[in-house]
Image 1 (cartoon, helix red, strand yellow):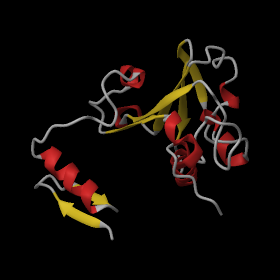
Image 2: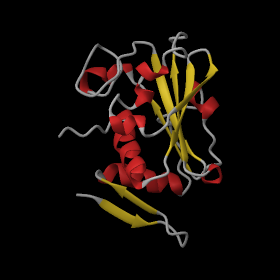
Image 3: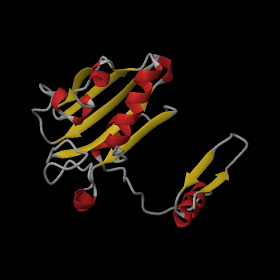
Image 4: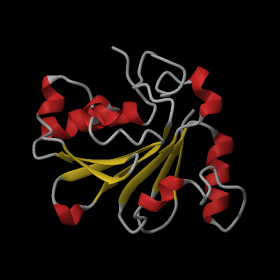
Length: 173
């Protein structure tokens, strides 16, 4: 059963499918401390702007690769782009920059920059992916940022459909 709770007068809303998880989130919002799921030592944090209203981070977990069809580890799977040196990715949407979303991908593969269209950043090779007018730039060896133009409703819908797959929530139709 999903659990929903209003947190404050700032119209925050939390939705969870696990009661224990929801209780932990609420306890931490009220000051409880504990081990973080994504510790500060992860290299992804260097590229996260926590001042933005919309941002996200995924660290690829090698220990759960057999259970995750989107994991880049362990060969070809139902919903992955293979990269045995994958580290993680960061999502950012800065409203001040207009309708431009970014995903930064980190890998130990320092040859990634010349071929970003072969990585999960390309969101596939179909017509909808090409309509995003994706621009790539290398931020550091093994770190590539993709900028996605989201001017139409169709572009926004496709981006978030594909992005959910990047986060490990691929839909199989």
